[in-house]
Image (cartoon, rainbow, N blue to C red; front, side):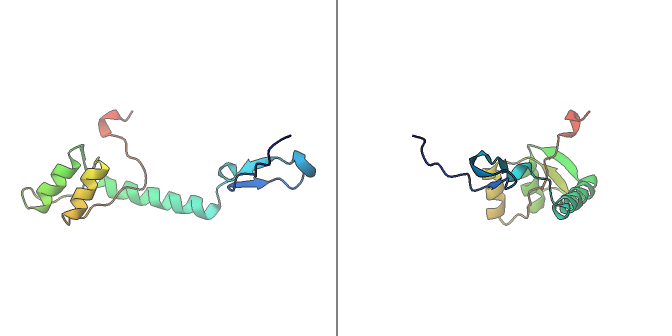
Length: 111
């Protein structure tokens, strides 16, 4: 006797095949809607434009952000890496930061 295990909630049934032989297709395997694809392309374009005028500071992002916030160095657009703890600390101190929507490769590791 087979157990009655329901289909996953994030799956669609292929109604073209009758009965219990229906195949289940995961939603992630469906083509991306044009609106979503266009929105992601616009986000990527905006991020590229923002990073063109920004300096990579790598793992020193939190340190550099604090130095600029407290007037120890001149303010300029920067981007880099920070742990979740470091980012929370910056926000708690009132330092304006924002995560990038897409990952960024370190400049020295690009081909």
